[in-house]
Structures are given as structure tokens and as C-alpha cells.
Length: 91
Image (cartoon, rainbow, N blue to C red; front, side, top):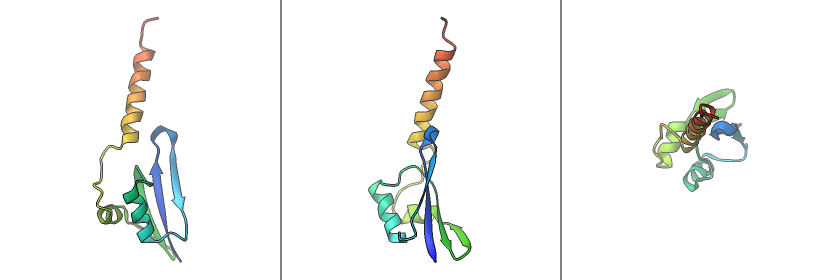
């Protein structure tokens, strides 16, 4: 049996692992291309009892560049900055 695990990072809201044994590699790639899977932390292929990290391969096939900082990270940084500014304001 083979299946894929796609870990999606929502920043401060947490992470979600999408696991569906019926999804094929081609379907994972099409979901990455369509934008259904955004802010991907990793993609693992599980076959029998072996786990392979295939994130770079899937992103390359989907022609998506790997981004260092995701939109969720930048948004979380903005929230943290504004919280710190409010915390140090004079009352």
C-alpha cells in the first residue's frame, strides 16, 4: 500500500496533515498547482513501511519554486510585531 502525507502549515493557527490513501501522486501535484495545497511544510510518500520525503520532487514537478518564508510566516511576524508595539505603548 502506498499513500501520501501533505503537511500544510497555517502559521500561528497550526498545521494540518492531509492523508488520503486514494490520492495518487498525480493528484497531489494537481492540487499543488491549483493552489489547494498552500504553505506546504513537507510531502511524504509512505510505501509499505518506508517513508520518503518527496517535497522537492513534487514542487519541481508542479513547477513551484520553494519559498523560504511563506505568507503565513510573514503574517504571523506582522501580528507579533503589532502585539509587541501595543504591549510597550504608554498608557
